[in-house]
Image 1 (cartoon, rainbow, N blue to C red):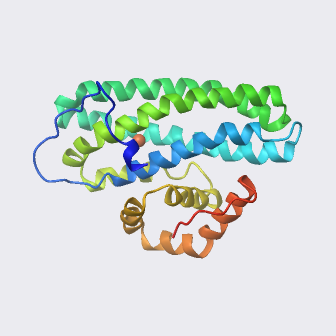
Image 2: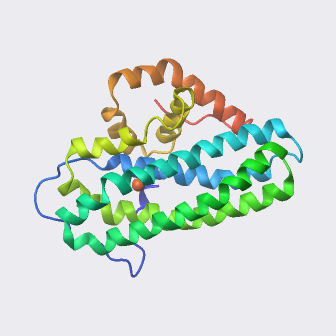
Image 3: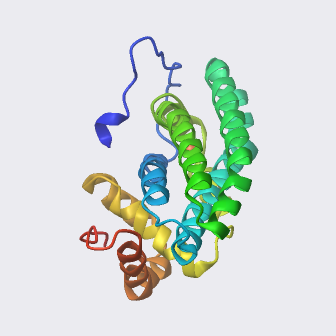
Length: 240
Ligand SMILES: [Fe+2]
């Protein structure tokens, strides 16, 4: 995923303010890589659900629903805690921030359209509804492939110079709590599984010790169990 985070032809980055880094933005890349992986899987998981298998559609629907809720709150945290501060402290990146706000609005619109489709398919396992849902997720993924990449390439380097570590940590704290803890730990596994080895090492270093211990004692097993249910027969990727 690391090579993915580069500017495409014609894309420009805002100037990075001088001075030392005030925070470490590696976790943004880790989170975005997990979203991209998750939304690549979503259409495949939906289409591979046997017609009328409501046990399977319920399970897959919940997993994707959690992903949607996490994406929504991730964007909400940035809307609430990041954009205004960036505009004030690094005015030269205002145009890029405006673009991020516009991307978020588009993603919110797509998620709003997805929610009823997902709810219907989750209850019915109907393949026609499933196909409409799978296509809606493909449309979402197309937007995310641009937005999540550009946010890392264009915004994070500026944020690292003007946002304090305490403020940056508030973003993650603000995003917690949307998913019950029993399903939050497997999501942590998904973050770890999709990070590059270097990003994973840095990311793990920043996880509070109690959470790290909880993941190793309970979460890792929950992640493996969930992964086997999602992808029967596939080897469970390494985390920590
Ligand atoms: Fe983000």
